[in-house]
Amino acid sequence: MSNIRVSVAMATYNGEKYIKEQIDSILNNLEKNDELIISDDGSKDNTISIIQEMQKNDSRIKLLEGPKNGVKQNFANAIKNCSGEYIFLADQDDIWNDKKVEKVLKVFRNENVTLVIHNCEIVNENLEKNDKTFFEFRNSGKGIIKNIWKNTYIGCCIAFKGKMKDKILPIPNDIEMHDQWIGIINEKYGKSYFLDECLIKYRRHSNNVSQMKHYGVGRMIKNRVYFIKRYRERIVLKK
Figure (cartoon, rainbow, N blue to C red):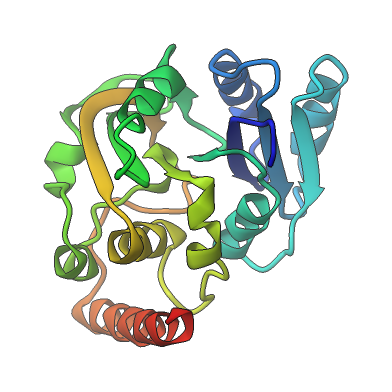
């Protein structure tokens, strides 16, 4: 059994502007035996050199070559290489609050809980706050049908027990995003807990992969059809 308690799975791509600040905030939350697994999907800027420079002073940072097949598979690669009892997801451009990990692990003391998603402050490039939190903006909460219809899981605020990896992976490539998949698969096989406390600053800027907007009706229907198809296939496969 691994002696690593907490693994952080981070996916990076051309994130030089904010990556150091984010990594510093994560490392401040980790114990000496924890790990930060970074899967980089072929960055063309200074992202890799910044990470490598930080690695020299902190052996908890492990840098992997990503599959170069988009953000979902980049996260899947990071998750696959995590060995901790608890796996936290991290974007490359947010900032973790102090004691984020400690507060999430406290929720996991309830042995029935297999995934924790916490609330977050929505901020701009200059860390100026939106007047709504993410939970308020998305009306976040549990429910498989609810989250297929309108996803309220957000990856950068998710942590799950390592034992859920075999249920979550592989992540289908034709669904919209990895966080919806992780949340709903967990609800099928485990128990989610929505913690209404803001534990990160969720930075929104022009280069974000995910967008806080509604797609057209055609795309929304297509996304849900693909998701339901892959979800049903996974349930049958895992029986």
